[in-house]
Amino acid sequence: MLRHRSDWRTILWAFVFFPAVGFAPYVEPRVIPWILPLSLYFGFCAGVFTHNQNHCPMFKSRRANAFYASYLSIFYGFPTFAWIPTHNQNHHKYVNKAGDATITWRYSRENTWLVASTYYFVSASWQGKVLAEYVDKARATNRPLYRQIIAQRVTVFGGQIALLALGVAIYGWRGVLVWAFGFGFSALFATWAMIFINFIQHVHCDPWSENDHSRNFVSKLGNWLVFNNGYHTAHHHSAGLHWSKLPDAHAKIAHLIHPELNQSSIFGFCLKAYLLGAFSERYRTKQIGRAPYDPPDGSLVKLETAAVAPVEAGVNASMA
Image (tube, rainbow, N blue to C red):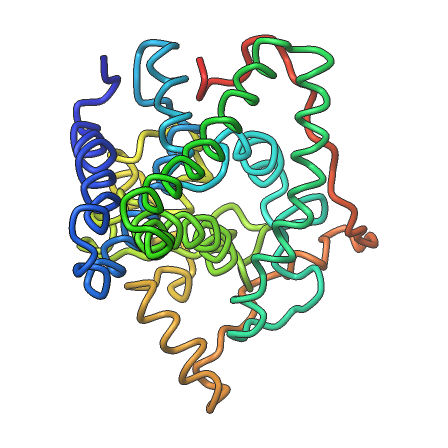
């Protein structure tokens, strides 16, 4: 049923490790102090999987993809269809230029820890407007898609409530902690982390350039752990390319990318930019090439988010 054999590892993570780590505190609450790092890691992977699924569906079957999208939404903590209007249709079209709901420079052109860590609230607020418009269009023009949207919403919120109720039923009010460390914190982290990663992958990059519009994190171990999510330039060049093919795609263009935009690891980048950068300007990121708010034609930019494309019948490949 898989379109790519390498997704057997995705299956292992999603259907074995996700629930195993999530339910571990339900079985033995004493693991709570030790489970959080794993829980956050798998929450991050849930975000990566929802991103991958909306670009390149994992299964050949429509029903399998619809089930998988709803299943992932429980661990991601948000309906996975949200990627379609805000990311696929909007971000990939404008790539941090005016019109992108996720622009990194809406209220600040700086790249400090305060700006980066609070970017979630700015980006989520503006994405919400795009998302609401998409849902309204689906309700008016594409009822099958709208039913799938409702199904995902019911699944994610109903699933989390059921998991919370299960913890309380077993352990009383201590079950709130059981749920929080098993599923709650990882889901919250997943949504925050996806928006944070979007910020560091585009802040101070050149969206007008063919190859310098994104920042890459090229550590082989790091990319193995996050399913090649670090190769962002290649992803923007071919959004539907399967994650397993991104290393080769990146290798073909790596020499064309500004050296500062090929970082070794996310942790190393954050250490330099946000910890050392707080004490010394030499470690802070600087604008590479032309800034997104400086169009080549000299025109004025408008910060209004562009409208999403009309919802067409069968357009949603991730639910196809």
